[in-house]
Length: 242
Image (cartoon, rainbow, N blue to C red; front, side):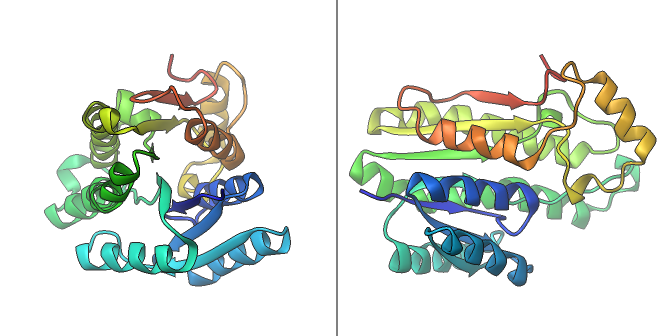
C-alpha cells in the first residue's frame, strides 16, 4: 500500500531532493513550500512526469493554524501522512551581539518551533495506526556549534534533543523518530561562503568533497524504511564531524 510523505521546505535544494527520492519508492509526496511556489510546483511536475503522485501545499509553519491547514489539505488529497520530514528552516549569519531578539526568534521559530508544530499534528494519527516515522533535518552545527551562527546552531541542537526525546516517548506506540545532521552541502544557503572558504571546508572533510542534496535525500529514505532504527542522529557530512 502506498504511503504518504510530507516534506517541509521542499521548494529548497535539500527538500526538493528528498521529495524526488521518495517518489520512486511508491510514496505519495506532499511538497510543502512557504513563499517559493513556482519551485514547489516544478518539483511536483518532475515527480508526476516520472510517474509519481505529488501535490504542492503552501503554509507558514511557524503559525499553528497554517500547520493544521497544511496537514488537513495534504491528507485530503493524498491520504494519511505516515512519514514526516521536517526539513524547512532558515539561517542567519553574524555575531550574536549584533543579533536582534526578533531575528533570534525568527531562526528558532523557523527551524525548531515549526518542527514541534508539525510533529504535534502528525503524531496522533501515527499513534492511532501504530505506524509512522519522523525524520528531522538538523545540521553538523547542531552537534558542535558554528561561529557566527549561534541561533542556527542552537535551533539545530534543539532538533537533535527533540528527536531523542520523541523517540523514547513514541517508541512504545510503534512510531520512529530519527535525525539527519548534514555537513557542508552544495545549496544556495551556503552561497555566502567564498570559494576560498568552500575549498578550506572541502579540505577539512575526510572524503574531500562537498555533499549534495541527493546525499541527504538517500539518508532520509533509508531512515524512513529502516524499521528497527529510532532515536539516532545520522551524520551526512563526509566525516567532517566524527
